[in-house]
Image 1 (cartoon, rainbow, N blue to C red):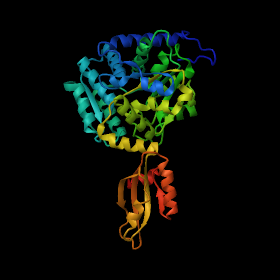
Image 2 (image 1 turned 180 degrees about the vertical axis):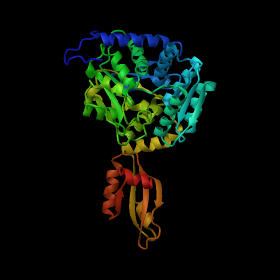
Image 3 (image 1 turned 45 degrees about the vertical axis):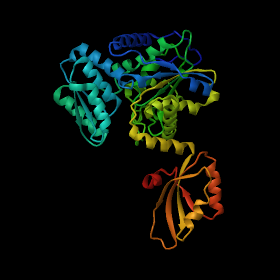
Length: 435
């Protein structure tokens, strides 16, 4: 897709390549209706009131597999089968949404597929993939990490002459994911054009597709890409001018934790500025997950909450008066993760902290310490780390409170009492060892 010169954007002025892409997406959307109806585009009153804006949510968490990944998989299968691949075995490597979309589409077309997953994949994801694919899929658990699993899938394709279905880096996948944009154009109120379209980014298939389809409708500056801080593959690539492979990736936001954005996707996104990519702390995303669950009854996975978390980062002043579309990309949340998500959210909000204290080993020392706590302070964890000290012992303590400013008072009281302590809440290495 070509970029419109700065300051010269006019809606409806698509290039020939953009028109061809839009036509392909429209055809994909029409075919997709045999599988499921459009996902809703909902005006969210809670978020709209908070930011003084019109905030629409494109609810991809309400697709048949609770993510947009089914779209690209369907379009890939549709075209591959039309080209004569119906008798071949389709293969994918995934432990998440791509596997579930792949399985659903295998059953729809009545073709056999093999899903490679790491041995470490949670049983819940294995069971859901098997449920969607039924007798049309075989699941193989190989390797401890995704790279080993992916290599096994590639080897299987080469050995059997199968068809590899990539998760994001393919023109047919991009075209399928772009049907999200085609639907929202039809769903927006008449005469309404988004000032800002907010999209999560992992491998880049969704953002490459949506920006392509909306190229003649939304100013290039009106796109915002969201990545977790621990996996900034698009931002680093835009800053460098070429695709960058990250040395390390934080897998907490598993649906967007990609170490290398797709090559084809980057070519379609390189026209954007690195400043249009917003990095969000993993713990801030947890705040959004818990808030949307408690207030709106929405179940969002970490990647699905990225675009809403971005609104909080932008704030009222930058959003007031605007029309915003935020894509909630997925809702495959394992509730066994909820305690960790709540913990991370409280730490981000400043409502929970962990300290290592040096406490005298004498009768009444613990009672004296408890007297320092305020009425809104609660001990969530208490553990002796060093029990053999003669005069002093080290203690790990977790404290929850109702207002973050309570910790300012608490630290002042600790200092006045001559209590030696270390706040390890944000010390990632130390907290991971002892918490």
